[in-house]
Image (cartoon, rainbow, N blue to C red; front, side, top):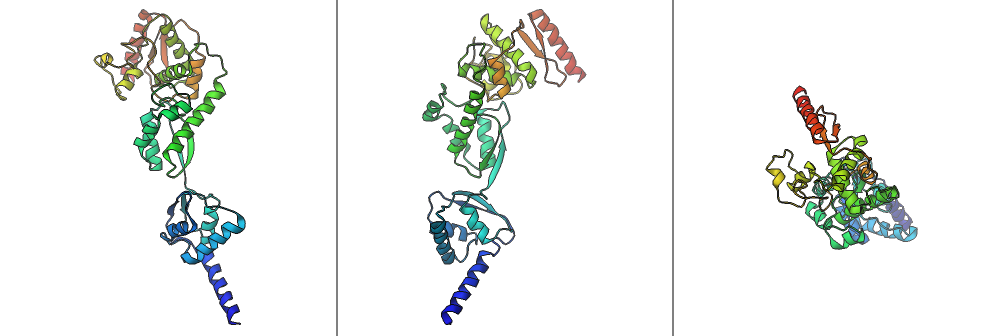
Length: 327
């Protein structure tokens, strides 16, 4: 009878503890290490007053793991006041309450921007991010014939677990670029460029115009310049050489850099940002035209006026200046 009462009492206590609210009201964020033992997992949760008493839940987790042949998913979890200890147990054995962060990387941003956005949203080291984007093994694996992955990280919206390892983030961004490239590479490449050259041209087109319909035209203009041996004279490449400087002076156009397309003929050494899919498609399928020049309309629309000769270009530049004054 005594044994029965003790068993009944312990069962009732365990049932109470299992269904007890896990937190006192505030949300809790807990990180469970990879390959951690049940003891370490319970000890980690106990520090946040979850799964207490520890001795009881250590036994329960071991039994749970053995009978159901389940394992604990590592990662960072977020528990609220509505969660019970049972919810916590189910969560760590399913991974369903791991803390997910949605991150949007805008089109046309640089490697440094990717690192900064990732660091800010996932609380990881931006320097390590940049270092991995220069890792020789990673570059080789993704057939990147450059010293960095600049231009090869796909700007989109992603879901990451909180504090995802930096390497995993970089690989996911590169994998997404690979998928995107594979979805469009079968399209006719009228420029006969390599992938690296396509991305380089696409990145310049991306920086030049926010208007999707204009991008194939601008890509065609740059190909026209390349074909006749004319310098590209693309402001965005000089801005890249000057670490993102917004307003350029005539002196800036003399900067000693392989990215200075005012001083050097041909394409720069590599992409100056991560272009959008539409800019990549524009570089692969530029519009055939006779234009050699373009200048912004100046009305805030992002549109451009195009010209076949320098005289018409000068007229368009005057229109641009007048529109700036009027707006």
